[in-house]
Amino acid sequence: MTEIRWHGRGGLGAFTAARLLGCAVSLYEDKYALAFPSFGPERRGAPVFAFTRIDDKPITDRSEVTECDCAIVMDETLFGDPVRAGLKPDSVVIINTKRDASEFDAAGAKVVTVDATGLALEYLGRPITNVPLLGALIATTGYTTIAAVEEAIDNQLAPKIREKNKVLLNKTYEVVKEAL
Image (cartoon, rainbow, N blue to C red):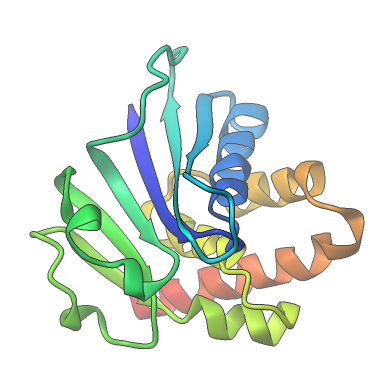
């Protein structure tokens, strides 16, 4: 089973990203997925977690992901012990930042950095980092395909924002692939 932990803040779209990934693999790649959030008081800017599990067989574990294959940090100020805790061997940490990956100690995990906020502002006009970080995840891990996520975007997002998000997804994928 592949387990992904999203570290975000209310309003950045952590649960939407987890749900889009789950939709992509379960509806368009014939796998099983489970996506769910975890947060306290619902307010913009408060730290939140979201989780995605992916497997080739039905998933019965509905508990929070404590050991993950990939941690995505939607706001670099959230990087720290909660991100490093429970990283599996050979895991990946993807961080939304302008800083270089070498500036982050992720307990032996591979660190990938991308300016998801800058890309979101350029393509959406808003600092919503869920779709660009999903593009970075696909480029780094190959857990799903761009085509499957584009289908999930069409399935899950409002019609007026679909095309911009698909352009943003592809652009981030290209930026990260070139940097790897």
